[in-house]
Amino acid sequence: MIHYRISTAALNAHLFDVQLTVPAPDACQRFSLPVWIPGSYMVREFSRHLGAITARQGRRELPVRQLSKNEWEVEGLGRGALTLSYQVYAFDTSVRCAYLDAQRGFFNAGSLCLKVHGQEAMPHQIQLTDLPRTWQVATAMPPAAGTGPRHRYESADYDELLDHPFELGLFWRGEFQARGVPHEFVVAGALPIFDGERLLRDAQRICEEQIDFWHLQGRRREAPPFGRYVFLLNATEDGYGGLEHRASTALIATRRDLPRLGQTETSDGYVRLLGLISHEYFHTWNVKRLRPRDFAKFDYGQENYTELLWFFEGFTSYYDDLFLVRAGLIDEARYLKLLTGNVNTVLAGPGRRRQSVAQSSFEAWTKYYRQDENSPNSIVSYYVKGSLVALCLDLSLRAAGAAGGGRTEPAKGASLDALMRLLWRETPDRLLDEAQVLAAVERLGSPALAAQLREWVHGCDDLPLAPLLEKFGVQWAADKLGLSQRLGLRVSESASTVTVKQVFSGGAAEAAGLQAGDELIACNGWRLRKLEEALLSLSPKTPQRMELLVGREQRVLPLPLHLPLARPAGAPVQLSLADKASARLQSLRRAWLQGG
Image 1 (cartoon, rainbow, N blue to C red):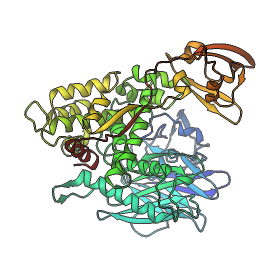
Image 2: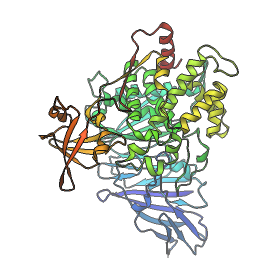
Image 3: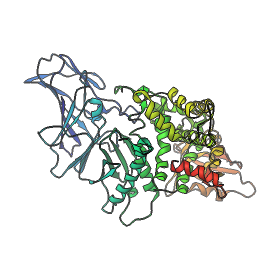
């Protein structure tokens, strides 16, 4: 068994001490540390946090030779266990790496535990030592069998080892059952007024809805693919995100978004947190088990490419908020407000005309996770547009299937729900490629719809959202334009300064020569403290003329700008429940939102 002894003795130095023992090493044994973590598609170079590695076999000290940025080798080994010792600096508060101080510890094994080449399929064990007396441990990794020291955990192989994050310290802990399966919720850093019982109740409703989604067939419910599930939430002053694992998820959210004792309303921040919980839990099926064929075997030493993140992340993003409706946590009107935000996010970016969601998926490693001031002009989010592709596919299946069907039309009752369950049940080894998705769409829908989906995925045209939503009693209307949208830029505003953050291609701001980093000092001779104040300086005789004074690189530049009167492409819209929707449309909408 490969054994890692992880010590937290150096809390104030933010250092984990790691001792790796290999009982039966090769004569020339190689080791490596992952450069990325599954679920977050960016090379993060975890090895940059490793200190010097020393090796010992019995009483012999052996040299460790570094082969590359993340690979090492020990030669001249005889019989007997080999022990490596090293330290890992841990001061990353994200869900992807490791953190350690006097109040809290957290780690993903991929940032601490070297891989022993040739022995990845062996059982792996983690033993935690030198924990402060009052600290707790939370993880979905099973405890090691038999007697021995405390805080020993065991995984079947290296892949499983990397799929179980650990939370250490003093934290709130609660439990609930979802369809007979124990679930644990851990929250670190919460305020004393945090309402843990409400969080448990709401999380339980989400989990039960999703278990039923995947495993309820008629009156028969299959067991989910895990015997226990753990949520690890770190509440911070400012943060948001999550990372899925096979039987747990690591989350980060702001303290103010947590529910509070005595609070009955559901704040926007809490809805966002519930959507995050829903998203990561849905991944338990969609990406952790049903996964891209490209990910049949992870290569932790380099990028792992796939064009299918629009399905695994985008379709998951479609269902995350939808399950809040189905669980009764938000109403239909609030769901449409969330959907409006996603629609406007995609429409606002000129990059939607330049990059398909398939390209976005493949280039996630270099573009989506490495965004700059030009990103809105060059990329589209496979999360957000992918969720709208899922919406279009769902509504297309439901609309065409509502009247029945035949060999060339969607079957009665066709929906994206049915498609997802079909793929879950019938995909061999649960390894999925695009051809299998299209074949399932053709089977449940039609060849024409499968061809349409392929165009949505590989093309850059706008999706037919408005006509599809209207068939379900959802009204699509133009929303109010802000000045930044009319000009085609994004700004940040402080107490007295307005700074350009991004300039959209094809807009008035670009035509005028504005660029990221410019400070907007004045308009038509009047000082600007907020961008909207520029409207107050416009002359009734020349309402389109804006003479801007811009600060750039210690210079002050005059820039004339022509304010367009027409609504720009990608202007925001507003979705709402149609006031006079027929009984039929209301029935279709109810079936869509409630899962009928």
